[in-house]
Length: 95
Image (cartoon, rainbow, N blue to C red; front, side, top):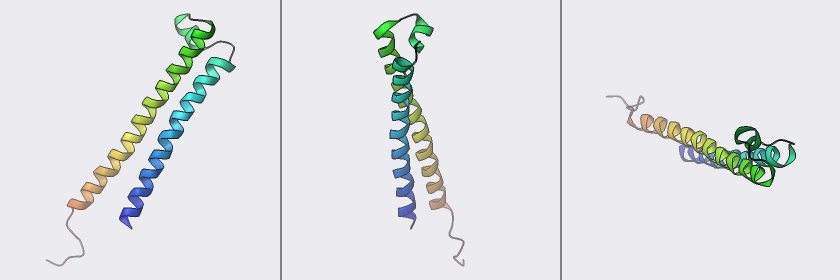
């Protein structure tokens, strides 16, 4: 059962990782191509198609970084908890 639970959480982390990256790409597309003024135009003054592409790339990169941080923290916390449970003495044992 423990194996099933750990692997279920890992699959959720993989799905969340891809969803966060897709969200970053979507936000970059929306901000760069749908909105009238892109983030690159506001931040560094690059307008037109280069500014839109720069916004898309920057938001995609930020989505990847956010996904790595969130996914890494979840996996690390699960691994720490699993290691602690492995090191605890068995409470059902009569010594």
